Structure formats: C-alpha cells, structure tokens
Amino acid sequence: MRYDGRENDQLRPVNIIPGFLMHPAGSVLIQMGNTKVICTASVEEKTAAHLKGTGQGWVTAEYAMLPGSTATRKKRDSSRGKVDGRSTEIQRLIGRALRSVVDMEKMGELSLWIDCDVIQADGGTRTASITGAYVAMMLAFRRMKAMGMISEIPVRNAVAAVSVGIVDGQIRLDLPYEEDSRAEVDMNVVMTEAGELIEVQGTGEAHPFTRGQMDEMLALAEKGCMALYAVQRQALEAFEEEAPLEAEAPGSGEAKEKQEEESLTVVAATQNQHKLKEMRAIMEPFGMKVISQKEAGLENVDVEEDGKTFEENSYKKAREIMALSGRIAIADDSGLAVEALNGAPGVYSARFAGTDKDDDANNQKLLSLLEDEENRRAKFVSVVTMVYPDGRVLAARGECPGHLLRELRGDQGFGYDPMFVPEGFEETFGQLSSQVKNRISHRARALSRLEALLREEAGKER
Ligand code: UDP
Image (cartoon, rainbow, N blue to C red; front, top):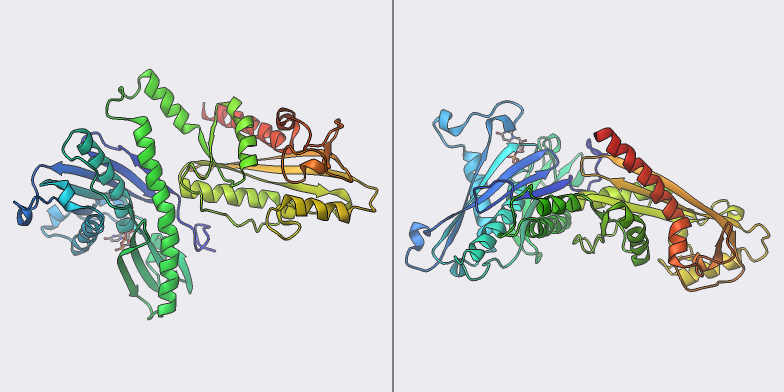
C-alpha cells in the first residue's frame, strides 16, 4: 500500500484548469496531487536568432520553483546571483518535449515562450510542467489562429509526461516527493499520444535496474500518459465551451449558467449503455448532466471489479474515473441476490456463467440452478457511489425485492430483468416500461438516496 492509498498503477488526482490567467495567450494551472504548476504560453512576434530568415518559428521554455513551493524556502535565482542548474536542465527538457510535436515551418517566424512556474512541489514537477504546458501551448495556438497569426494549428500530436520508478521494490506510477526522494529507480517519461517516446530519463539511484524492469516501467508510464491525454483533451474542450473568443464576460447570465452546468457534469463510470441510459433518465430531473466514459475520453478504461461487495466495486470504479477525468464521477455496482443461493450471484452477476456479460448464458444458468427450488425470492441491489475531485465520497444502496420466474419474459431492460418480477407487480423488468422500472428499480432507489445525500451536502455548504 502506498502512503497516499493509491495502487501502484494509479495516477494522483489530475486536474487542469484552462485559461487560468488573463494575460498570456494560453495558460493553465495543472495539479497532480499536491504538485501545482502554472504553465503559460506567450507569443513573441519574432523567431529565434538562429532561425531568422528561414520562415520557421521556435518554441522555448523556462521553468522555476517559487520560494514558497518547497518545504524549506527556496532562494530565488535573482538573490542567489546564479542560475539553478536543475531548473536549466528541466526547462530544456520542456522545450524539447514541446518542439518535438510542433511543425516549426507552419508556425512562421514567431516564438512561443512557455513558462512553467511551480507554486507547490511534491514530486513530478517537470512531468506536470510538460503535461500542462502542452495545453497552454494549444490554447495559445488556438488564439493565434483566431487572430489570423497562423493559418492552422501547427501541432502534430499531444504530448504528456509522467514519472515512474521502483519504490519499496515495486514498480510505481507518478511518484510524489515521499516516494521520489527514496526511489531505488527513478524515471521520467515523455511521450506522444501516438505512443512514441520523446525522452526517457531513467536512473538507478539505489541499484542498477534490468531491461525487463525498464520495459515494465515504460508500459506503466504509457498507461499513465494515456489517462493524461484524456484530461488534456477535456481541459481543451471545456475551455472551448466555456470561453470562446467572442464569449461574453464571465459572471454574465449565460456564462454563469454554463459554469454551473459544467460543475454539474458527472462522468458515469460505466461502459454499459443500458446503465448509462438509466442513470441519465434518473439524474436529469436533478439538473445533472451525465456524460459517458467515452465522452470523457476514457472509453478504453475498464476498471477491474475485484471487490467482494457492491460497495467496494462501486467505490473503486468511481474513484478511478474521478482520478482520470478530474471530474465528479458516479459509478454503480449492482447485481441480483437470490435467497435460495445465499445471495449469489451477487457481485458476480455479470459474469455468473463465466462468459463476460453474456445475459442469455447467465439467465439460463440461473434458471437451471433454480429448477427444483420453491423459494423464488430474490432482490436486485445497487450501490451508487459518487466521488468528487476534492475527495468527498457519497454512497447509497438501493434494493428492489421480488421473485424469479421459471422462464424469461419481455425484451426490455438487460441482465436478469426478464426473469425478475418486482414486488407489487405482475410483469417482469423485461416487460415493464423503462419509466416504471426507473421509478422502482434498485438503481432508482439508490439514486434517490443519493439525491437526499446531495441535498444534505448542499445544506452543509450553505
Ligand atoms: N525538491 C525540492 N527542492 C528542490 C528540488 C526538488 O523540494 O530544490 C523536491 C520537490 O518536491 C520536487 C521533488 O523534490 O518535486 C523531486 O525533484 P526532482 O528534481 O526529481 O524533480 P521533479 O520530480 O519535481 O520533476
């Protein structure tokens, strides 16, 4: 277990706030756990001296840590009277990383100055700088295009960076200072979204490492970067929606409404279209916009459901999707608990028959298991968990009691719906309309408890 409770292959919570400052052409605040970096991109209407007359532009970077960013005050270079070697090394890395994805010829004779200022350091400041700087750079290019300074955005690919290492003998992603400072092997990896490597800085600090370990670390870094591209994309999309160039001033009616709408956007941690549809139908009346993992750029993320309880699985899914998207995430874990089978299939409902999520095979298995069983009592259970980027967790359980038929009826719904008749009804969930199901289902009950919890939360904030 890591000291901050993360899994070895988990990033810290990432958040990119686009348009963080008003003056530069592009700016973001990037937060990776406790590491916070302001990245800006400023345009200068001339290229680097060595490129004058070539028609090519230049992208260059500077990096610094503010005095208050570290545990003991870091002296400014201006009062030390000399430039910090580490900063010089890091700023050259940031410049190289960004230049490798920019088509300098398409830029024309302009310079883009990227400034990365660490306001709080807790490991991985150089990698957070690169990941944030890419978004600041894109925002600047977008503005330059809108102003007619360039005809197209001269960027071939997204770039992001992450640290990996070996700590306590284990290969881990995204090291905070506590791990970075005692890492046996320490590595910073810069990659493009196409999966190409731009730079790998790896050091055997405590002992040498093997080629096999290096490959494992690179694979883990790639996984981390994939999640970071999604967060970058989302920041760029969010800013486009919130503040197009001709947008009205912030604080005005429409902009405010948009902001509120944005804060009520919830990513549903599910690949299941049926669940998504149900969540939408149930949550929309509460003013919440539920977007899919796909819409959040996380279609390839499949969180392993290896918990023993619905609560465990539901929390795990929401926690991970929140960490990857930087937004409120909602997850549901649900299943059927059959009294005569001591609560089975329970958390194994979706893969009861072995084949993953094959509804028909699952139903057939349950029908035959209960062939000679008189006790037909069963209940659907759903645990819905909402995890906020600030760490708050709301969890609610809903149950829908009923009984199981000896045959399948109806083609509405999914899973065990065609076998299950909810208490007080004659028809199965497979026959009842979705309006009825959404009113009485286990998920509806869990979501309405969740709504009560949300109201309580809102009361506390006031
Ligand atoms: N650090 C610090 N003071 C310094 C340099 C580094 O406190 O002058 C801390 C800081 O938390 C930083 C971490 O050490 O994030 C790791 O530093 P490193 O040089 O490995 O770079 P980073 O991981 O930040 O890219």
